[in-house]
Length: 122
Image (cartoon, rainbow, N blue to C red; front, side):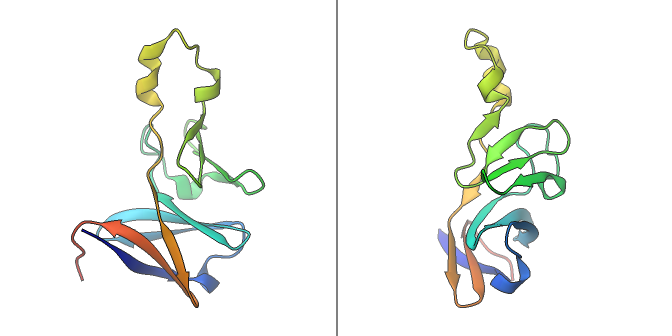
């Protein structure tokens, strides 16, 4: 079952910035791109690098992992790099190109809510 869970206040996530939050023991990253909010997993799917320490390219909506420089679209979770440089005939490399999990976000007043699947511990 999924539900929208309050994770932060709008005022806590400055424009073009990141904020790590936790829901039920799972770390998520809130991204504010010019007052549009997105929620993604806080760990890079490649090798669990801490995306909150990565670089946000706010004009493109891209986050870059600080460990191996993998890049993801924060709006969709799609891997953008190295996907764009891997040769198409080396299909075994696809295992490293997992998308980044992203979550639906809703803003109600000054509250940011994220759609979370699973049981929630209080």
